[in-house]
Length: 254
Image (cartoon, rainbow, N blue to C red; front, side):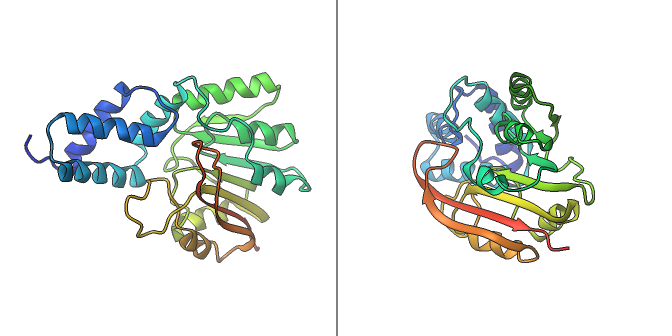
């Protein structure tokens, strides 16, 4: 098999992904693709190179996430938590409801919880399957949520309109200054950002596309008041094994 350009590697991965066996674990999907590449009699270093290209594109592009999460949400199994995030529940327990935004809302577990607590909730999600299930879950709970099929790149965060932004296990550039400024500009004074995700050091080998470097996350949110920060090993909302996580609650200082 001749060497492929990075664009061709990505194109072939996107062609294969809809055909993958449904799985709730993104790591399993990457494992399936590794097996497929190995079956093509590629050398192991070539397979590693192709997977590195895929991982890099997953960090910088949204088209792969749409297909991957369509696969995950269509699997019909619950390899991820369907209850609200614990950090979110603890943070808003004594907080007056306002306007909330759930970014990368998935099946709407956090958005439905907030709506039940009296929040005016908007959520966006890139997966068609995720949006459909979130709408079903909102109807089943008897709440109204504005559910939008949008990517992180195309969603208009607006200016000074959110009292709360939730980003749990969302594959977005939360450690970049431009993105954090985008969040900050969309918050009302004293508005909160809640983050929880997988974590690893920025230079760690084999890090997942969704991993956040805790040091870079805290540095990026220095323009906020940090109310809570944790770099720990715990059970995540995704997957069924303890792993390194980062958690943050930050308040916009007007």
